[in-house]
Amino acid sequence: MTAVFANTSLWDGDRVPKVGICRTNGGDALSPEILVTNIPEGTTKLTASFRDVSASIDHGTIEVPVSGETQITIPSVPEGESGYLAPCSGRRNKYSVTIRASGARAPTIRLDLGTH
View 1 (spheres, one colour):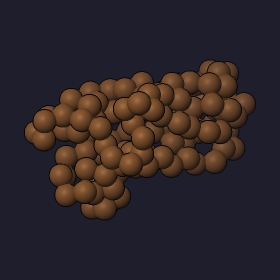
View 2: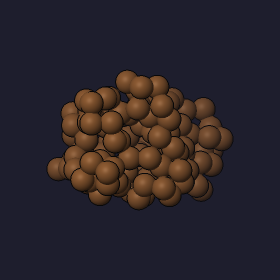
View 3: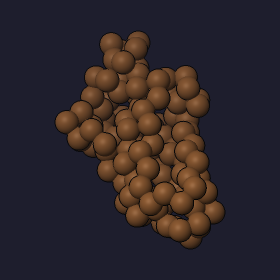
């Protein structure tokens, strides 16, 4: 299983783009779209768990059902949906997302969202 940002012109893993920053800090508060490929047979669900790694704070999860697909895009969601919290520290904290497959034997994938 592999995962990449669906829009690499916005998300590069180095700095959280304005579209991904919380509204309090002038952003649009949207999570990144993530393209997941080579999804193992038997997977029933993908879970994307967002985290402020620097402060050890969870920033919510997005769950996507899987029914035989080998490729899925985890959609972008606005802050508040699915409990998602956009990066908001403004102190150069490091943010990441971990993607797990349920219902199959699959590795866990971590993508760095960048700093803010």
